[in-house]
Length: 95
Image 1 (tube, helix red, strand yellow):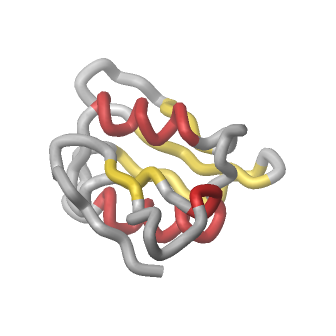
Image 2 (cartoon, one colour):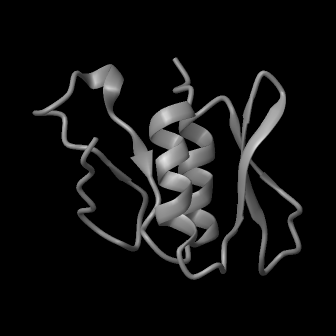
């Protein structure tokens, strides 16, 4: 699935013209991400949360049936690119 990042400073969504509204994904920028971007993603998905919050750094975690599938620190160089793959394949959008 292709994604389209409009602004790397905010979490983005895939373009609605290609997929139905229910198939839109809220995604992170490809590299490091901010707390605001992580909060936007966590607010959009029922199985994604911010954990291990150290103030300046934290982890975004994706779980399926309570089991951790992927986690990433916000300061990792390719954090968003790696996590976005799991958002697309395993993210559960909130209603």
